[in-house]
View 1 (tube, rainbow, N blue to C red):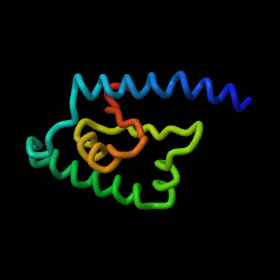
View 2 (view 1 turned 90 degrees about the vertical axis):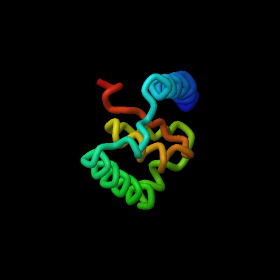
View 3 (view 1 turned 180 degrees about the horizontal axis):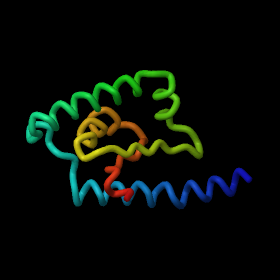
Length: 101
């Protein structure tokens, strides 16, 4: 059973990462300085929520690299900037929720 999970992880994880990278190439996360007033407020709110999650026990567990485990974070266009700022150095895959529709 474990070998089956390993093969599955080895096949879909790189594909998902490539898809997310291609999405980011086509539509990069917006520059925070370009946000309108309401977008800046949304960015601050999302960044605060994401930061609290990242620092929580659940966040530390979810984002910790482990075999057969991949954190996938989906968020709004505005949230991409916050997510990349906070989680860009982790093993998580960050994708715009509009790309999942």
